[in-house]
Length: 288
Image (cartoon, rainbow, N blue to C red):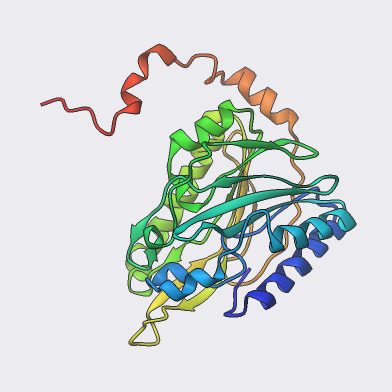
């Protein structure tokens, strides 16, 4: 979805999308990263902490009511206020039958031009938790987490059958012509590799549209979000890809028996040499 400057408008549009997905038979609905606002991390502005809320809190309460009425589970990415000075980028699972189930706090926090998330978000401290939805065990990682094979593996080892990645990623306008295609391909390829390596489904849900930087000096400064939300199967194949330039509500039927099929044929989890991976807990292994 594209997001406006009005959080309430964005929430209404998200709920409209959830209702449309439910009418088309969805069991689990995932929203993009920080769907209630434009991507505010393009600049460092302390006044924007006012957008944060408790989790569980008002938005999860609202979504829980919709989930109950519609018979769907919902994965929602929210700006969590934990305490004064401690905020998280958090995904919550809300179930149709029991309301708020739990939350995951984004572990990997970027700090790049127009992605100044370290100013706003404390790194997560809940680990790579997974949740029981009514139809599958899921992981609900967030955006920058999607570049880390360790995160996908840790969630998969906790039983996740579907890895959801609420996302806000796009191009800097001055890079799109020269680097845009490669950047998008790298993003999708990385996540498809998580599906293959772990024998799981991957669902990545992005936003679309151009969002100008709040401190822009020209009309072109900002982020062009590339959309193209997608679903990858346990063999890495694309089961669905959304457009790059408009909102899209897509219901994709996942055959969870493909997980067993792929893991029997490609038993990567069986053949892991866990006793040999100690170096992975180091920042870097000096070898000079």
